[in-house]
Each structure stands twice: as structure tokens, then as C-alpha cells.
View 1: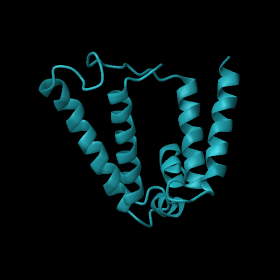
View 2 (view 1 turned 180 degrees about the vertical axis):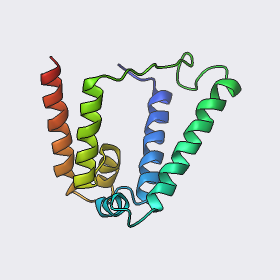
View 3 (view 1 turned 180 degrees about the horizontal axis):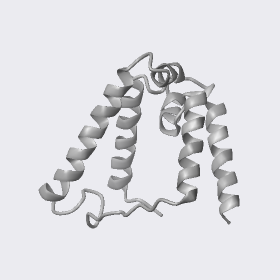
View 4 (view 1 turned 135 degrees about the horizontal axis):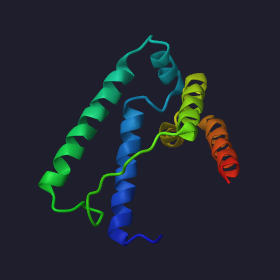
Length: 137
């Protein structure tokens, strides 16, 4: 899939803004995430709650205010479907997050802060995704 230059620039800017937000909120630091998961620090709850609130408002208002998405043809609903694979994947993700304090998005953003230890976690995430892909075939 090739992106038009303006679309690629918008995607890059969005990713950079997301990474900056993760870094500013300290979600790129596994120690901070683990202290949140141990119920010792509730700062990330405010960050995640704020993100959920903004997302809910954007999803409700964007189709009403815009004729079509800025980078797409139309707004559409994506029906999700729960099955055994979804449940197992969510459980494995939660266990991995709880053990390491690392989530894929913040791990990638954390590399930008110079935390190269996150490469181990990203390697494990990639290996897990590869094994799941093989298993699914």
C-alpha cells in the first residue's frame, strides 16, 4: 500500500504526537506502568481516562461535523467479534503487560527516549505475534 505524500505526512505527525504524549505521560517507563498496576500510582489512570474521554467525544462528533474522514473515503462501523482467540490473546497481553510493564505502543515510543532495554520486550512481542500467526494457519 503506498501513501500519498500528504497522507504519509499526516500519519507521521499523528504517530509523533502520540509518541510525545506517551513519553510526556511517562507511559514509556515500565516502572511507572508497574506501579500503576500495583495500585501504587494512579497518575496513569488519569492519562488513560482522559484518552478514553477524548476518543469517545471524537467518535461521536467527527461523523457529525465532517462530511468524510480527513484521510479516508467514509466513516464506517467496525463490528468486533469475540471468540476464543480474542479471549486468549487478551489474557496473554494482560499477563505480559502485568509482568513487564510494557505495552507495544509505549515500547516503540520509549525507544525514542533512548531506553534500548525495551528492545527485549519488543522482541518478545514480535515473537509472540509470529507464533500466533503460525498457529492461526
